[in-house]
Amino acid sequence: MTLNRSTLMLLAGAVLMIAAVFLALQIASRVSSTDDVPATATSKADIERIVKNYLLEHPEIIFEAVERFQQKETDGRVAGMREGAKKFEAELNYEPNAIVAGNPKGDVTIVEFFDYRCGYCRKIVKDISALLKQDGNIRLVLKEFPILSPESDMAARAAVASVAQGKYWDFHLALMEAEELSEESILAIAKNTGLDVERLKADMQSPGVIKTISNTQALAKQLGIDATPTFFIGGQPFSGALPLENLKDAVATARKAKQS
Image (cartoon, rainbow, N blue to C red; front, top):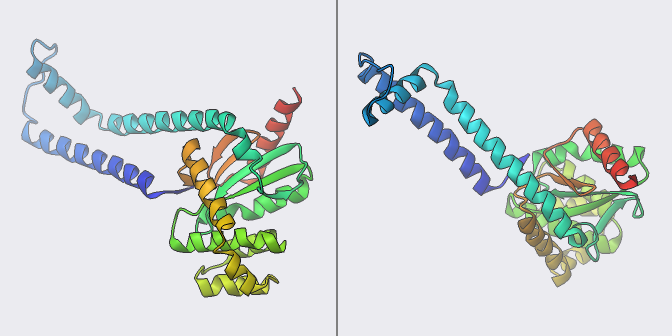
């Protein structure tokens, strides 16, 4: 899963916090290793000495606490995205002029937020393609969500612009496989995909293309999405590169829930 800058900063802060606390405990152990630790606390100083001694003897509890905090944050984030999927169901699944692959009338909708610079998005594209081939009743909605670099934004605009020429899916797959996403590289890929490059360059600047991407960014903010890839399968949120079998399981669950 590729995280945005704010999430990476939070994780870095957590790591630094752990390191600082651990270092402080090591220093404290050297400074006060001869201190007697009371069996029971009769003062604030006693409580501090008991807690300090316990942490020195069980430093792993610090990591357990951070892990539990992170899990709580993740659970809350997923719950928020699940509620958001209900609240913004129309924008998520049926946005006007949505980019759709697979079966437009499929009984299960998968929505993917992705970035062409995201290594995990690139990794999973083959599994997504295999899923669409194996299950002909899936409607895939593709949300261009460039958050990693200016090249991401350029590639996203080019991909959205390619819709008008009916070449989106092939171009999308080619961009996912590209090692480089400079303007020159993107246009070369477009040409190799059979796109009219001059028309594509003009369409990349069109208000409609820019609006499509800005709408996705606004929706992602409303849903609390800050990483790629993020999926909604039957309204249920998933983050990270889901293997093919996990994708199948999620689709089966969504299909069963819809039938019940």
